[in-house]
Length: 284
Image (cartoon, rainbow, N blue to C red; front, side, top):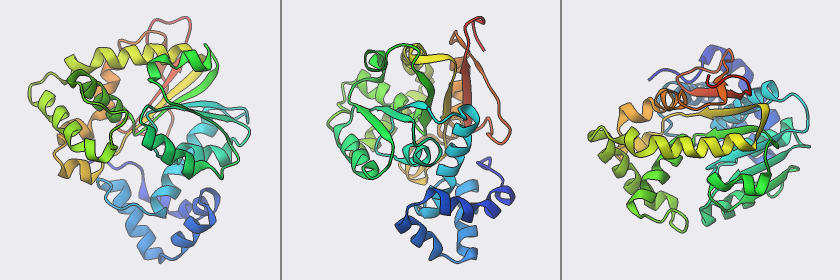
């Protein structure tokens, strides 16, 4: 796989990032690792499918989102909408350090995951709004043109899997997500083997994106990232689909009017898509 980032650039910064973006317990865990062990974990994180879950991961990913959010919205008043967050607290943890006066909103229908996210973030000095509804109806809650950044943190695959589950009549709202994941992977594998994945999910995905763009202010951004999990691959996720999730999605987004791709140095197009909402051009 193509590395997520450059080890030589990231490693010298990681300890400072740990002090900035980790809470005291997480920092204590980070400091329990030798420098050699931190280097090993970071190199594996960047160059292999993710198989370890430690404070090294948290320091790296929170810092990356923090850097991106500062670039996209330097002001303190950031309004961010995260799609399909599950119970991952990476972005609110970053926002609490970079934009503590901002507003974090997430649209996520799975109740158990929302409860878990609430527990993980209850101590953060950050205004949060967790909406238990389909993201396609998000404008009913946010209004139009009120959001500065829309984030998909390793969420494109979750949206695609939810679309397939909906078509198959599988409940994703009340289910235990990890128990459902093998079935989701099987659906992706099935459609991929038939070369029908795009036919099944592209238009519902673009419908969601059109609804989301309505909530975004003119000049605002959509940021999507992806990386590989070894567990998903072990459970049969088609490697070519999983590794090329972002390039595949980019091709679909070329049909989306009202935005254009925006590139930033250091955010590799294999793993990131950044779109900017525009008014005058029909596509990016």
